[in-house]
Each structure stands twice: as structure tokens, then as C-alpha cells.
Length: 283
Image (cartoon, rainbow, N blue to C red; front, side, top):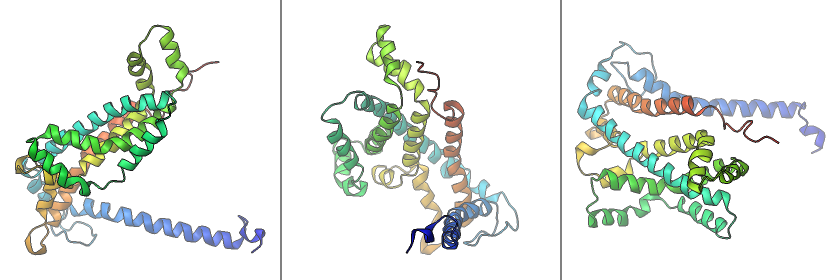
């Protein structure tokens, strides 16, 4: 095959572009179709597995779902677990990423590779000893204990992401603060953290979404039905003998996704679109 046959203007290259675009279109449809089904099915009185215009249009599915037992209490439990996990993870990740980003030590690479290896361990493989520890220390149904466990499982990836964001903050800004007499923690809090707010927002959303959709951990560690998060109670719409309340499931899924979308919009609003480093270093 000659080099000219792979030129950008060759017919073969254009055919490859058409095939690639068609493949991307099919993948996009696979992602969009479930979302369209949820939106349309939530307002349909006769929802089934097909994607169709609501006929008749109704809000009955939302009226059935938006009750304290079905939606409000599970959503509040999810907010407590996911928000607590995200706050703890971000705080610890900032403190852990700072020395890894600012100091060149021999243990940096082995530590980071060890952290990366921690993300490879499937959580299902460790749940048996974790469940035994929770029983031993009376941690079942304890939101605080579950938040710290979820934070521990989220920390490896959070540290990696936070370190990469922190590497983008010029160290000369910290040196200027040190000359003015600021301590290391004051420099971290007043100089580094404000400059990497978008990165912190990204890590917070990433951890929050991971905890928000976590079904397995609360299903194992929570036995009190009143403390179940929404990710577990959504299972209630799947009845016995394969029956599924499709309309209520679609309405609940729509409500279930709104807090994450609201959080994303809130973080985008207050963190800005990019790092605020332009003009921070002069000369």
C-alpha cells in the first residue's frame, strides 16, 4: 500500500470517515435512547419497553412516586451519604496530593502506583471482610461509618486527579506567600485551593456521582429500610414474577437524576470554566 493511498483527500480516506461517523452516530443513539425512554415514559400512562409519545399524557406516575417513603427519604439518605463521602474524599485528597505535587521524593512513584493498584481491587471482593468489620465494630446502619468507607474506596482515583490539577498551580505563587510569612497550611488554603476550584469541583462531582449510584455497598451495610438510599430503593419498582412498574420507574429515574444535574450546574456556576491562572504569574 503506497503512502498516497492514505492521503486525507483519497476516496478510501473519505470512506473511512463516513464509516467512523456512522459508528459514532450508532453509539450516540445507544446512549440517547434510554434517556429519551425515561423522559417520555415518565409522562405516559401506558409505559412499556418501547419508546413512544405519551398517550395519554399524565402526571400520575410522579404523584405515585413523590411520596416520603418512595422518594423523599431515600433521596435525602443518598444526599447524606454521597455528600458526606464527597466532602471527606476531597478534603483528604487535597492534603494527600499537596506533598505528592510539591515535593520530589523517592516514594512518590511507588506510592502513586500503589494508589493506582488500589483502584483495581473490585469492591465485591472485599465486602465479606468489610461486612465482618462493620459487624465487629457495630457499624451497620451507621451513616458515618459508611461515609468513611465510601470515601476510602474513592480516595485512590481522587488523589490521582487532585495531584494532576495541583501540578498546574505555579509554585512561585506559594513562594511569594512564604516570603510574606504564610505557613504551609495557610498557603495551601489561601493560594492553592482557590486557584484550583474547578479541579476540586470536578473531583467532587466525580466522587459524588460514584457514591450516588452505588448500589452494592449500602445494600450490604444497611439493613434498616428507612435508611436505604435511592440507588437501592429503585429496586422496589421491580416486582415479583418479572413485573415492572415502568411508568413509576421512569418517573423515579428522572427525579433521581435531578440532584446530580443540579450539582453539576452549581459547580459550573461557582467554579468558572477554567483555571483562574491567567495573569497570576507575571515576568
